[in-house]
Image (cartoon, rainbow, N blue to C red; front, side):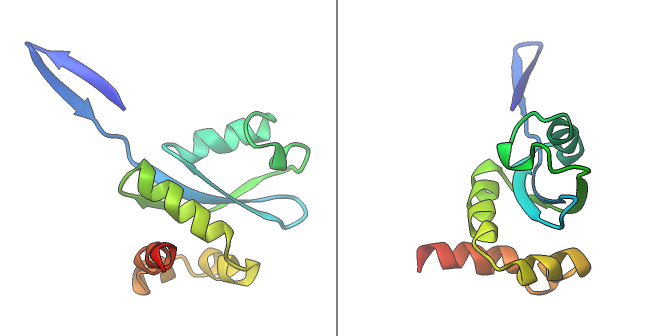
Amino acid sequence: MRKSTSENVTVTLLRPWFIYMVRTATGLLYTGISTDPMRRLGQHQRGKGARALRGKGPLQLVWQQQVSDQRTALRLEYQLKRQPKAFKEQLVQYPTLWQERDLATTLLCSITQ
């Protein structure tokens, strides 16, 4: 979050958060969050960030979904990482499933149960 000041008015610029999946050369799907998935992919490709992806290239950003805020992104990341690979492959193959089935709500509700 950045703050901009203009004529004694402070405005907080909210940056969108994304949950994303990266596919490794061996087909592994890595799930993460970022305010800029393409920038984050570049960091992963340079060996910065998640150790799980170091030396696993080439990497490909295969899915991303904007969410409301960092807290929501973290909670969804946690739940998505717990899902079987087949579930994640469905999201990659059919990106509209996220909205059609309201998967964000479904996954967030499973946290409280």
